[in-house]
Amino acid sequence: MKKYLNLLFVCALVVSITGTAFAQTNNANQKKLNVKEIKSELKDAKDATKENIENEKDKLKTDIEDIKDNVSATKEEIRSEIEKVREDAKQKMESLKEGIKTIKSKAKATLAQVRIAGREDALQKFDIAIEKINTLKDSVNTKITKLETQGIDTTEAKAQVAIAETKIADAKTKIAEVSTLLSTSVNELTKDNKTQLKQSTLDIQTLIKDAHLALNQAILSLKTQVQNKITATESATEEKINN
Image 1: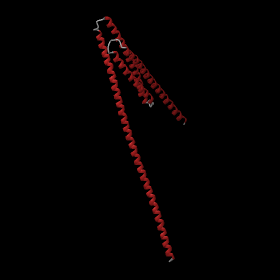
Image 2 (image 1 turned 45 degrees about the vertical axis):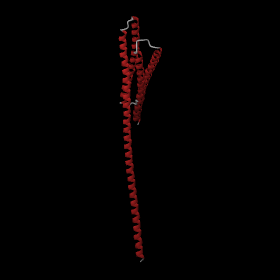
Image 3 (image 1 turned 180 degrees about the horizontal axis):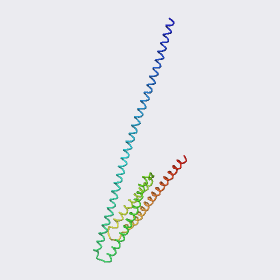
């Protein structure tokens, strides 16, 4: 009887240990399964977040490009309008020159011719100044494009060119205003007109000077960035040699 009881105790103990081990195994497997599920969910969430970020970046990029296109279109419209005003002024000046031929008084006709010639000379000087600054700007832009392909940082240079472009556009606007003023008639300018002409001339000179300064800063920035690139390359090469 005692042996029988001992046997029952042993069997019960084995069943208990086996059940506990099985339960622990199940718990371990369940934990592994939960971890895998969590990792899978985290990966899905990460992928979804990454996809959303990429989509937002693409949308932002598209929006920026649209803004740039709109700004470019606006600038082009303004440029075209300024050129139109300037061209209209030239045509009016030609009409004034033709009108001088109808002046009967030789003295008055000569005086009118001198005025027109002086006004045309002043406007031509403005046009030449704008042409020169535009040539410099185009040269800087060409340099920027070239250096960008070589991995040179052109951010500051571009910013300075943008400043120059704004100054040039403002100068062109002032020149268009002066053109309109000087092509109105062959008569002597009124006191107010003379004051306006003097101030506009000073403004144009300042704007062109500022544009030139900005382009010089762009050139200086490019030179600095090129030197930085050379220094960084030399340092990297020297480090490889030493290692």
